Image (cartoon, rainbow, N blue to C red):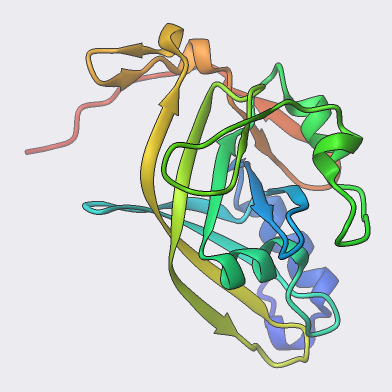
Length: 202
């Protein structure tokens, strides 16, 4: 078995080892608003659940040249955002939003996505998602690392759920109907494959 010291690796080498090993990763499509009202949207696979009481999620957004990316900056400044679960039906359009645009350009328009108003936050969501969470900023942790790159670890509190009726039954989400997709390494994605059950020991 190989034994590798991450300090001897470049950032790209560490990235490849992490993203190739920690799979599959759920994908959050995040909408946020700039100060001038432009709606930005971007996908992130450094995303997961933090807590269910209160309901909280995390987004890790790596900085570019030491500066927060548009999504992180918008969330930190405006204290709210919307997270959408990426699925087989919307993944192609969501992929289009990964293009690098100027802060005053909207990825939503670029990908021809449809905005819908939120109930508790000023940031709209997109109609094309079967599940979306309206979130407020709970905390932002600046992770500097050993370089000038850094990462913004965003902790968001879910203040409203929006779930497609077809997915919801007795308080649960039907994963077969959700058809969520996940991120692998490189340009690769994965669908939900074979599902198996296993009881936890008491």
